[in-house]
Length: 135
Image 1 (cartoon, helix red, strand yellow):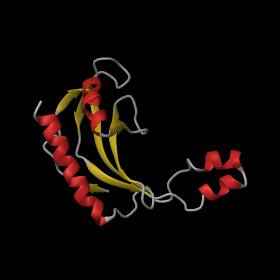
Image 2 (cartoon, one colour; image 1 turned 135 degrees about the vertical axis):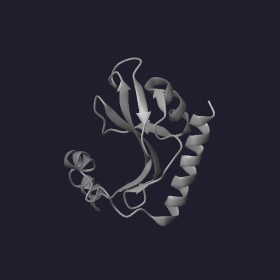
Image 3 (cartoon, helix red, strand yellow; image 1 turned 180 degrees about the vertical axis):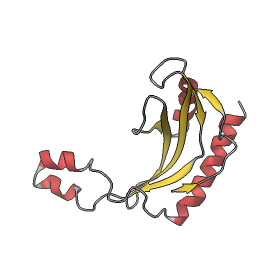
Image 4 (spheres, helix red, strand yellow; image 1 turned 45 degrees about the vertical axis):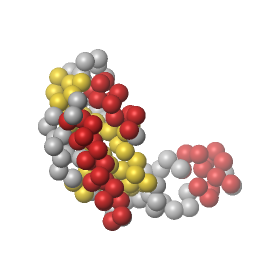
């Protein structure tokens, strides 16, 4: 995990409106959320696993599954998940089994982040600042 300090840290937004702004520029709500915290993920690449820019948020007024929930943004960070190689190869011999294995847990949830994507991540944070702070 590589943290990227940003001017968006601590800023508050209506979650629904925030999602409407971030989705068109490539972000999606990450699957690992709860009623009071979650994240937006930007998939940078899927080379040797998956590389993401993650923008965490915490509910400060309401719960994430309620209308009108206000969230505070945390510090963005780069995250790399490495999955076991060869799982897709099993689909040719066991289609049913392979369809489940492709969604297995990462072998390394905090894998080394390729250096070339660190620059990409930093530029994505600059874009994020531009979009969110100039509203």
